[in-house]
Structure formats: structure tokens, C-alpha cells
Length: 419
Image 1 (cartoon, rainbow, N blue to C red):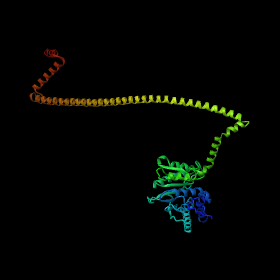
Image 2: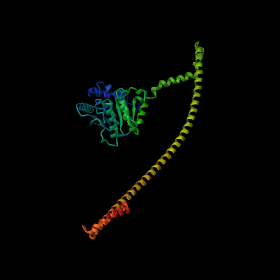
Image 3: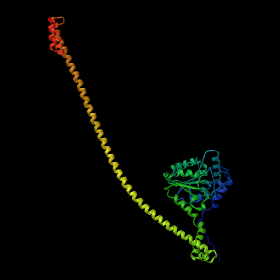
Image 4: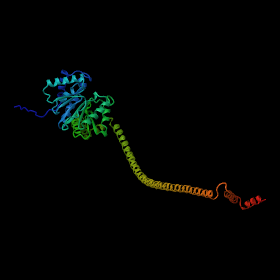
């Protein structure tokens, strides 16, 4: 009796399961946007699947902010709405006819598809709102083609300034030197910013055609593990043929059939001779390489000795520089002391000069007073136009001649007047 086995394991998402609702939305509601009418160009099927998987791998409760809604004409929002993990989906649309048209198409899609159990809300703009509950994580979905490279780097900085714990999924990251998005993201994720950039096409060979990038802070608790788990989904069986080829090659080498074939074949002897010749050359090259390595080792040892001597010389030079600095400091202190002594001596000399000046003034003042009193006494003893005054003048004249020319000149004058 045939037995029916019901497989109760959860089915993994595929390109078909994630692509079908997006195609329905595109055919029934969406109109051609700035990226063109081709859905494969607007939202590649592989990128839609990777978005679904990364959202599925993200742990905890979170809010998905779709800032690529206007660029993808709502296709990225449909991917988010058909995933049960987000608490709610916020579609960022710029005010204007284009944003109103996308909002109307998404409302019609949500109204006609009751299977989308995730609430949909709209944001006026293309920035992460600052009033989101901190207890919920944030996953930001954006499109690099909607911004120029400089604006993209600035926008990434704004998003992480608003929510440092955000996980950013970026669509439309083309090849290097083609769109400029990679260069802008590298500037926005420099080591000093604390952010890290992953490109999906670099995580696994099967994802080489993907244009999706992941950005998060380096200390994000789940970002690195989410990307690693995503890469693990596309490695393993993809390399099965390489593994099978390597195993067959080792098995053939183990039997030695290659050597038997060479010996039995008519052209095997020249080939073996040439092979042995090349083996000899390889052995000689190996010996020469060993000698060169020995020489390099000896050179490194000699370099180490020279570096040790150089370090000792540097220490001695540093000590000499220290002595020179201390000598210069002592010389500067002596110069300062000499300057202070000189200033003190100049101050003392100035005091001496001032004292001499005051003493001279005092002497002149005393001489003036003495002369004034002498004149007063003279006017009292010998009034003007009197015989005593005339006698006093003659005595003073005799005294002046005596003082200037000597007593002999006085006597000669007296004798001349008597004659």
C-alpha cells in the first residue's frame, strides 16, 4: 500500500515566490518610473530574493523603512509587505505628483491583497524618522541610483546619525568606476566612521550578478552573522564539481597510472627526460633559494646588530641632547640673573645720580640764601652811594686781583697809584 509522506519542513523562499507578487503589482498598478519600464532593471529578481532572505535572517523586532519606494515605483515596498517579519513598513515618498502616484498604487495593491498583513504607512521625504521606538530595530531599504554619489554618502551619514543601530540594504550598487556608488560608499564607511560595507556579489560566486550592498556599524550585533549566513546559503553544492574534479585527480595520482602511461608511450621517454631535467633545475633552484634565504637570514642578523648599535647611538645622542638642553637652561638662568643684576645696578646708579642732583639743588639753594643774607647785611652796613660802600667795592676788587693775579700785582697797582 503506497504511503503518502507529508513534508512539514518550512519552504525556503525562492526567486519565483518573491518575484510573483512584485510582477502582479507591476502589471496591475505601477507605472513606468525614472528607472524605466523594465522591472528587471528596476528591481532585479536576485536582489529581491536577497532582500527577502536578509530580512528573514534579521533577528528581533524591527521596522522596515523603504526609502527606495519612489525610485522602484513601489516594487521594493511590495517585497517588504509580503514578508511577515517587519512590525510595520514605512514608505518614504517625496511630496509631488510622482510620490502621490506611487502612494495611490500601493494603497490599491494593499486594498486588493489581504495577504499583506504588515501595516503600511507613508513618510513625507527620504530620511529615517527620528521618532521611531528605540525598542524596535530599523532596517533601511534604499536605492543608490536615486542619489548622486556625494548625496549618497551624505544620506548614509544622516541615516546612521538618526539610528546608529540601523541595517541598511542598498539597491543599485553598480560596478566600480561605472556609477560612482561604490566610491561614495567607501567614503561613507571609512574606518574612523565605525561603519562597515558588504557587497553581496563579493560574498559568494553565485551572487556575482547582484547589485545589493549591506551597511551597518562594526559593532552591530547581527549584521556580520546575517551576511555570513546569506553567503553560506550559496556556497557548498555550488562548488561540488570542483570538489569532484579534485578528488578524481588525487585518485588518479594515487594509482600511478600517469607514470605507467608515460613509460609505455613512444614519446614518453623524451617527456620523462625533459621532466627529469626540469626536476633537476627545480632542485637546483630550490638549493639556490635556500642559500639566498640563508644569506637573507644572515643579513637580517647583521641588520639587527646594526640596529642595536644605532639604538645605542640614538640613546647616547639623546643623553647629549639632554645635557645640552640642561646647559642651555643653566645659561639662560645665568643670563637672566645677570640681567637682573644689571637692572639692579642701573637702578642704583639712577638713585646715585638723583641723589647728586638733589644735593646740587640743595647746595645751590643754600648758596643763594647765604648770598641773599650777605647782600642784606652789606646794604645795612654799607648802603649804596656811601663811603663805606665805595670802600667795600675797593676791598673786593683788591681781593679779586689778589686771588686771580697774586699779591705782587696788587702791590704794583698800589705803587702805581701813589706815583
